[in-house]
Image 1 (cartoon, rainbow, N blue to C red):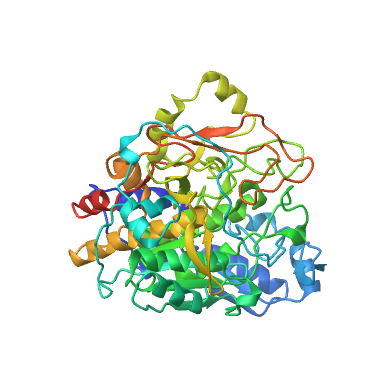
Image 2 (cartoon, rainbow, N blue to C red):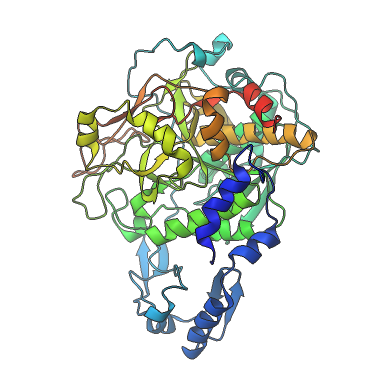
Length: 546
């Protein structure tokens, strides 16, 4: 892509409330015209391909797709493509590749290359919090909710907790919602319909879009529904009757081995690149898209992460809100760098991408406090964005010099802080329907689609008032967050203690240990709950004012 150096400034220009160009989103064609590679870049790369005997290629915007046999790929890229097999899964991949120096400025990444796919689905958490927290007196986070919400979270509870009240959106307003499914996950229509019936929601269907040859598995016996069902049920529970779409994407992307994914065939990373490539080719997309997946940041090649993040930024230029769960690993799980020697806190990608809104986790309802498994911290790949400077500086004043020094080897204080906001994740669990049966689930995987549903409602209010979509939320959040979000000041996240906060199971022997590692929830922004949980009433009044 060209003009990537203009991406952040353009996003801020269009996304900062009060600015002259706020909300003047670019069209599909305008984004393509501005950021597609130069003619020189396309010419140089295609000449190289043709001179190397590659005839079957196609230029697709910022990407060139081509077909080549294994010997040809090895010759072209200096690679060693082979078939790798584990647990019955066969993948054709290489462990390294190279390109001519003269093309280095034009080629950001080659895919597939080092990526190995596994088909294990990410399972939402159902365990209780492992910590006992003395709740601070925080009147701002107390909501009036039914007594039943102390033991389980239902759509009614969420509407009470987040001040949605009896707001009813218009299915014809133009506000639409999307959510992402990877690793063969697929929402069961039968489960969503049963969920609607159980909670008195008029029957609403939803759309599925298949990308990169995924499996739309409707067989409950396959057990590939946990994350997808949770997303769909939370969205319809919050935002009915707004239309929503599930985007199913097949494949797996590159990765860097670490203690949690020690071999290439253990890779459970998600195929973000083909997914966002596809979305950017579409002229008609949902105004908000939620994704409840994530990978340990340094388990993803830096170039791949950067490219993926830039594609997310391009969606933001089109007025599309991109939401990701922050993760369920607290401060960290394996807590070892890919060298298997360096102990570190685990940042989660794509939640660390500065061009999306990352959602952390809370527990309890009166008041909400930080969930111990809410992933957060600071990125090693992405520098702290300008919109976050003041918030992080204020937070750092709450961190003692002793702690700053103690944590310095394990984190990057100058990196992009995450999450940005938070929502209910555990204790009590969410009521869901899995394979036709009532169950409990949760995690930041639940909080992200809840936020997406609320953004869908906010867009509905704006559209009905003749206004545009909210788009990239972070400039709004960091400008107005303390006024329209419920600050979470109690609780903390934990990690790097030899246990996995998501699974509740011990980490492999040799994992990194940092005694006492935790992120505290504080007044204002913090790296466990961000600026806090949503207050729909306040948010609606705000977004209708500009």
